[in-house]
Image (cartoon, rainbow, N blue to C red; front, top):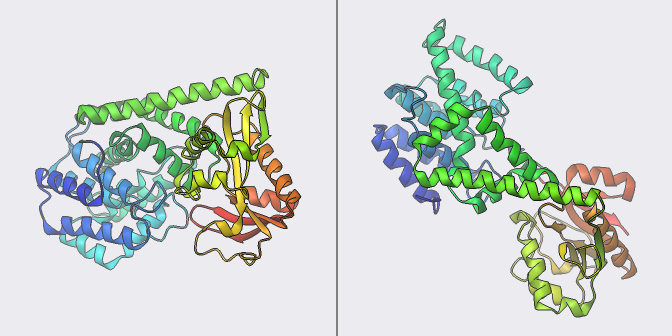
Length: 438
């Protein structure tokens, strides 16, 4: 089995594994449907562009049941129901204001939701043990985050009649939590090819407001940690999964490492000055060229989905004489295109409906779309040079204002440098709409 087509097919696969593991009480099915409904009603369904959406929750639940017979830890029938419930609710943070769930928000929600408490009672589940399992999925499991989680775990152990003063049981539950934490980090990458993995990495970066230049190296560090620090557990889990899923996981790891190698090589050439990045103003005749449009479109598709403005009419918009386009080329003005900046009159864009731009309709504002660069070329200042070139052109065309989207921290830094101002802020992404006076 490859990727799940949708939430419905995912639900069916989980149901068949639940039957295999004898999780047949109605309350388990109710928990599954309750989770799906709640995520979707809170806008965290498949349409939510963040890593921690309903897909992630269900993928972790699916893999935790699929790999449950691994040889590293012996799970009892009782353990299985705890793992199922903890997996299902491990990122249960429906009122999130940032994408990465705060374990404390998750615990608060599962402790106070009335319906959920009823379901846990009917399954004869000790909430304190579920809390421990969820706290053990805290990432990274090191430093202060680990210390804080361990303090909370101790409280939960003390509050539970099952675990209080029983070191053996506590140790076993911590091992169950370890299993769940590694499943949490492997599952999405085992259930799809590299295209899906790359999309997940971009979702994670977008949702955590990371700069694009760190996506690949962070992904590589993440996988190396799983394979090195978590070697014995990740090996046990992967060994239990079907061959195709193991292949997905390792293909993804190798692909990220290969891209990272290319990235380092680009950066080395740039620092030895074997490679120059040349921002170039493109003229109208090349904007009519089909091949030029296709080249830009391929780079455009590397952006995270929420940053792909006007995807359907992208190629036509390049030919529009009111569109400003600059490219970033290698070594000279006719070199290979590795990035571009593009924009046009604000009125030609359909932005998020929450945005109220007082200048809309006054034809005095140019909108700069998110800058697009090929992987490997971020962080070498080419983007900011294209942006400055774009601003100069907009100024010469007598626009009064420029608006665009950027990370909140980047906009804050521009408030003093360029008199930028926030027009609309968005959470959890912290990818905000701002204006500068030209």
